[in-house]
Length: 100
Image 1: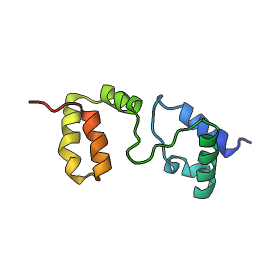
Image 2 (image 1 turned 180 degrees about the vertical axis):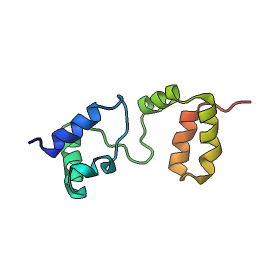
Image 3 (image 1 turned 90 degrees about the horizontal axis):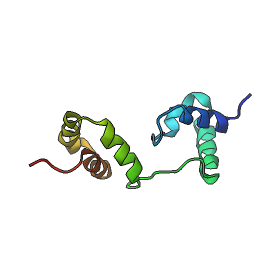
């Protein structure tokens, strides 16, 4: 039987490089506490990076910019009014420079 750490890594490796995951993505693998502890262990081993508020790295932003169409970027900018300030800042980075 695989330990929860291995199950988390296997699921992450099945995703696109640079994806962002949360403990909620793994609730089916164990209790919230078990998932939190496993993710903390993986972070200590250097297998995961923890991104806190305001810590979205440029690789993630670049990846999102490639995937979003121009119309999706406009929708993001329009919906900023409902986002917390730190999320709004990230969405502005993703949507790119303002059109004139």
